Image (cartoon, rainbow, N blue to C red; front, top):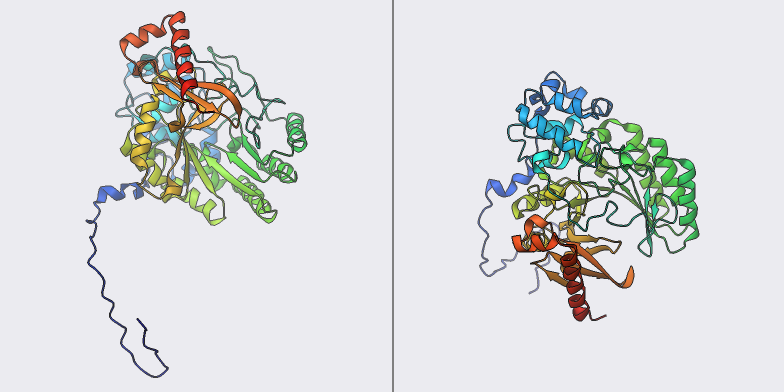
Length: 470
């Protein structure tokens, strides 16, 4: 159909275009938009120790850092009056048996629902309880991902052909009890004597020299510990050193910080400008510099988080999220959908959801592979594809990240899934083990017998070989 030509000074009626009736979706309910409702109340005042703290003080990153609780007795002291004494004793026993030392920010402590601490998803991640701990899986190792075995120099893991993991330091703004690097992060505990990777320029130079010597390395993750704990000058030093290597094309600064202390991005101007400076210099060199962060539950995202992420968004910083699937934290469809959509709302791209690594002392947080398979199926399509994370297993033993659907064999009775990783190590088989609490009583009894363990494992590998076309 030709449209009439409209000339200056004349009037014309727009052509009437007939269209077929379309089926309209019903109006959304308010609950469908709940992910946009972010807390902006003075929630910290519910903690007696912070009841008189002004918004200006609470938003100050130096106050947050200075008042972060690093001793178990101080943490338990802060909880006095909020929880029964039995809970205090339970937490004390949990920390005594935990592989991670304690560090909790006032921001994080204030977001926990102390009216129901046993079931709160944030408490579960950061404050262990002796009554909830379960025996470790018999195939668990402290360095379950074998990062040290693939380290040509201390603190640098080179596993994938074109990517390296640089552990710049061994401290964090807050310590997660489920940390996969509990072998190195934080101070020694009663359970674990750590391998220390302190910020050290000599060690860094050795890492940079190795990266420069390997022309295939294009992608470097700067982690630790946590990049949040690097000084502004160190962010610049590391960023500039890596950008100066011609074949390095991508840098990722990894930090839990925005989830546990977003105030730093708002009020630590030097650190923020250092990060933005590296991002800008990288862009001029046609190299990508991004921030990778770690939110696990929608309750970790507040109006303070949104303000911090908006500030980085305005400055052109790309932010991606890597979550961990955790029992009674985010292992249901509704919570995971809420997390993903809330992240997208604050300009954070959901990137990965990891199966929980086999970490000492946190068997109560692990889920079976089946849980990830089910949740991934039901969240896909809830939002745009680029805002939908890939659910992965970081294959124990050094196989790297494998899509949860890509197993060669999965025995739901024994809880053994078998993966291959041809690009990392052709011909090798990597095993992930469901938590024992998710198995039948008969299967749990088999895992108590070392001979039965080997029989189950060998049977799984044999069946995987039959199904592996390579």
